[in-house]
Length: 221
Picture 1: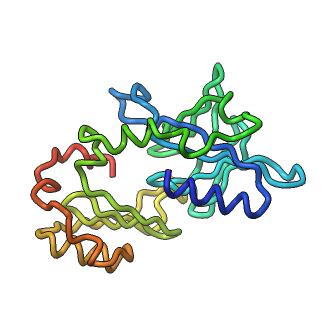
Picture 2 (picture 1 turned 180 degrees about the vertical axis):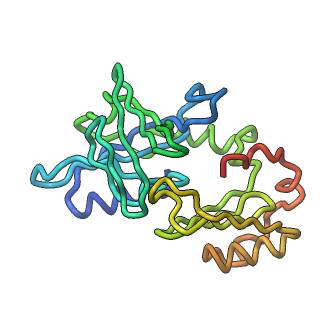
């Protein structure tokens, strides 16, 4: 909500009409989309009827470019990721082509995305309550991600992971390097060096709590 909320404000400054849409993130084959909305995505209508786009800068590994808001069309973005939007019975699903098949990633209601006026961030307080609750995985795991055109850099719990070069061009899996993180001091240094988060902002991290979490929390990262 922070990233997409801020980016939506920026797009409005350029004359775009913004619709903030509640969305559900795909879990795994067992969970699927059977979980509450914990994400807010953006549908942006360009000025002068120049088109409508799906835009998301707050997703863990989004397409690096906007996607035309049209259904059933394969779209390849600059990092090589193949994506498509599929509509079925009023439900829109974002899919990516990975491991030789289309896989679901994100889902929302078509009706919400076609609204004439957008909801505002305070309308999503219920989502914030879910994300920030003691039971939420976001309250119990350390996860930071930075995506560039040639690599994905992730700190997930006690593991520092770099994936690259481009993972999606020609359906190719990029090389993955995983480095164990052995201490709070090492984690804070990674956050400062690779993510630009000042050391003074990470003094309160609870390393014992972070390292005691179920490793399956990070299985898909």
